[in-house]
Image 1 (tube, rainbow, N blue to C red):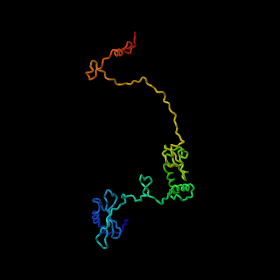
Image 2 (image 1 turned 60 degrees about the vertical axis):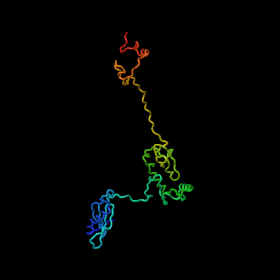
Image 3 (image 1 turned 180 degrees about the vertical axis):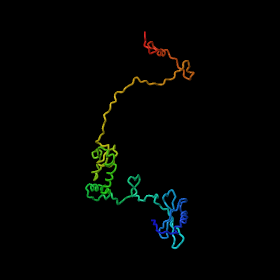
Image 4 (image 1 turned 90 degrees about the vertical axis):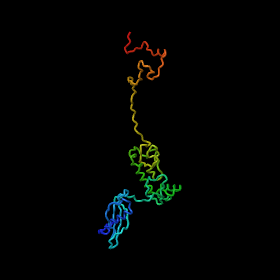
Length: 293
């Protein structure tokens, strides 16, 4: 810890150039900035500070400690340091692996370290005085589990589940019209937690396969329904018989122009039967005027 004394030392204060020259031998070239002053740490012991201009150590400072013997007029360099300042970016405090992991960090292949004194667990054969808990503990002991949930572990789990996304205060539960306790897909839990929790077995629910509270709810409740509006008649379809669809016609061949002259294939002459079919009958007229006798 830096302690600034009330008095100064002229010999140590004048050793800034000595401190810089020694620092240039150990520091990365071009990373020593302006002289920031000197702190007198103890009698005849001071620390010269220089700005660190390295891009990776923004807010850090170079420190060079100098000292002198009694009645000496020459300072001696003790050591050089690169120390963080008030605005330096520091790495987070180191934590052991067991304390550094958070819920949700565990992935495939990861293994949690064994905790022999886990407060959430207790020996499977230890009687707790609660009938439901002891019955479950003795049953689990027959299966070979050495530890089961303790009262503290059950309380922590219940508090976490109740306050989570499958509790009564979640957005989906607040907007639901019925609760899980009346849903046919609700499976109650065994043991002491059955009075508050169960498991959702509805594949249409966002809580399917999750622990839910009795007062949770969602829109997939087995006994609720939605309003079915009456169908609106649209009437019979209307066919517009007067509409005309225009389609482009092929360009007719100019009169007197032979088809081969324009690169077209010659057409065959119509037969006598085809000519009679195409010839206009006596009842056909070339105009829209009524036929008069």
